[in-house]
Length: 59
Image 1: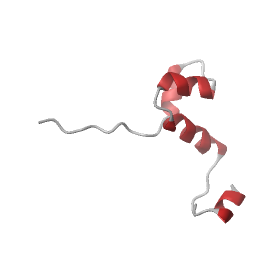
Image 2: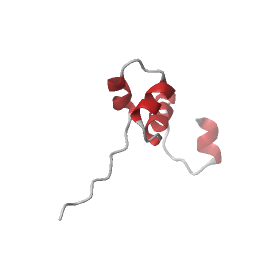
Image 3: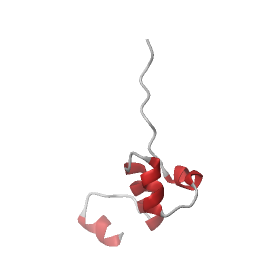
């Protein structure tokens, strides 16, 4: 983290937990994210995923 903050435009501190959540959020398929994080339960993986699906307005 110290190196990333020093050598990049990042301003906020982060943890390894944040990196795992970022990886889980960047994968489109929840099952693939579950495999990557080695979770036995999909509900645990869903808690890691931080991005919200974009919902388009109805007509």
